[in-house]
Length: 332
Picture (tube, rainbow, N blue to C red):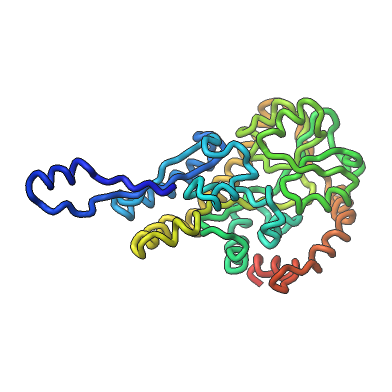
C-alpha cells in the first residue's frame, strides 16, 4: 500500500521548458491502528514516529494515519492485515495472537516487570530473541503497567473472593494463573470489555489502569483491586517486511532513525503516566480502591507457584526455557 506521489506539475513544467524531468517524488506509508486518534498512544508513539521520519528524510518519506479501525476494525487481526499488505505499518497487541509470540508473552508472566518503563527495557534486553518471532520489522516494542482488577458487583478484598469469577485476562499466557487462582479466565478484545462487564458477560477485568480513561471502565466498574500478581503486556509497532526491504538503503536508514528503543521508551513512559492517571480517575469517579494486604498477596503467589514452575520449564522452539527468556529480559 506504499503510495508514490509524483510531482506531476513539476514534471509537466520541466517538459514545457525543455528540461529533463528528474525523479522528484515522495513516498507515503500507511499506518493502521484501531483506537481513536486522541488515544495517548498516538501522541506518544505514532505521531513521534511520523514526525521523526519526515524530519530525517526531509519530507521524502512520510506517514498517513488510518485511525479508528478504518483499515481494520478487528484488533486481533492487525498483525495479519499487515502481513497481507493492507497497511505498511500497523500497531498490534501480540497477546491477541499469543501462540505466535510465546517468548514475547514472557513479559506478561506475573511480576516479571514492576512498571511500564521497566517492562519496556526488559523487552529490549531480549530483542535479539523476540524479533525472530515476527515476520515483520519491529519499529517499536513497549509494555504497559502491571494490571489491576476491576469488578462491578463483587469487590475482591481477599484471595477467596476471586474464586469462580469470570475474568477477562489481557493475554492467553495469563489464563493458567487465573485458573490456579480458582477463576475462569476469558480472552476478549479491549474494545468490548466495557459493555461485557456492564451486561454481566464477565465478572471482572484484569487490565492496566491506563485503560480506565481510554475505555471508560469507571462506567461499569465499582471496585478496583491492586496487588494481584501480574506484569505488563507487550505492544508493537510493526512494518511490513517487503515494504521495508523494497526501500533504498537511504530510506531504510531514515526508518531506522525514526524508530527503535527511543520510540519504545516513549510508549513505556506514556503508560506509566496513564496508569497513575487511571487510578486517580477511578477515585474521582467514585470507584472503591482496594489494596490487598501482603498476606493476601502471598496467598495468590502460593496458588500460582505450580504454574510458575511450569512456565519456567517450558521449552521454546529455539531450545530456551521460559526461565532462560526471563533471565535474558532481566539482563542476566
